[in-house]
Image (cartoon, rainbow, N blue to C red; front, top):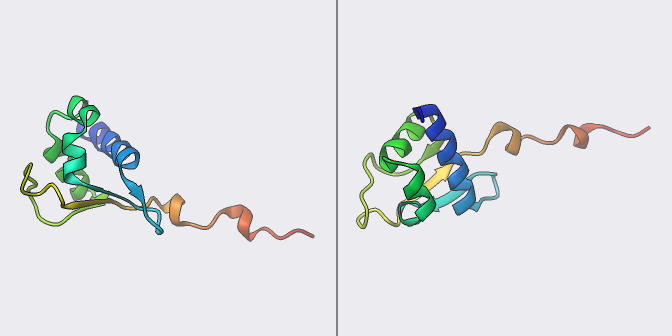
Length: 96
């Protein structure tokens, strides 16, 4: 799996494990991701994949390097996709 594929999988896992926010973003803690069996089986280097996704501006979290135990409560926020935060096209259509 290349980096782009891993970042896409990471986005899916954050959506699965996280809680959706009012703005369409998803929030999960590092500890939840790190301790999830499915994530452990998918990602050989969880921290590396998180850093790659952060560098590509798909998600955000405080700090540079996340460590198990020390950073379990750090919130990882998957930014909303433009489609999720944009109004639906049908909302703007009037009926005559």
